[in-house]
Figure 1 (spheres, rainbow, N blue to C red):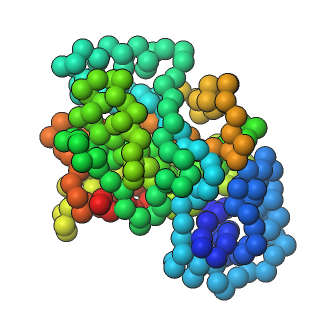
Figure 2: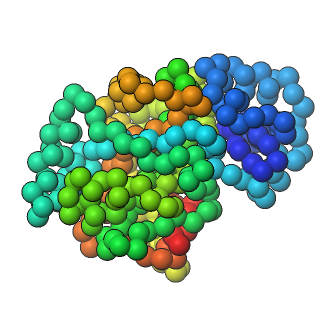
Figure 3: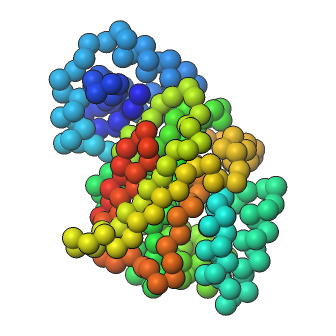
Length: 278
């Protein structure tokens, strides 16, 4: 079952049928340990709406309101290699080897809810960066109690030139206006995603596909619940949270995003998140 946040209210999609909830508060609705059962009950007991598809098409919003968005770093082997390569001249490459193998994961705050871009909204590259990439990431919806409630798609925009200059610059490389996009919906399920779930990234420039790659989530080194445990160990999320789980797709050193590029991220079972670059 898929849950959308729109300007007119919440839309639930199940088997290509839509159910609308115009008066529901988004934060209260999704921050519920029984979200799966609640959504299932709505699809079984409510009337099918003729407006749901129209609401999504004409008023789709990022599925985030007051939730914080956090991110995990160096959870894929390819990410470790990419980070080592970008920071080798600064002497920071060994840090990524250490965090990849450490018990404690790398976690950082990516964006507050109002700063998150949604499907078809523009993301940005920093004006003071010269090497920029999108990072396609499976993203978890987590309740305030620490329960994984669902899954969505995240685009963790990254300024590799800044992070490569010094690993301590990571907040500036990762957290800036238009650096985070999430959507188009939340896949609500009571089961873990299949290990062969595929993440696909495409970057289009003009009418040309200039980059494409795929990876499956079984390449994530850490268990998803492990990441959540560390995130929630000493911090409270009163409205729940989103956690990007890292990227395994790392374009080569000869690739950088440009204004007017279009980033498409598809995760099987969830959908496609599309963001033009400002």
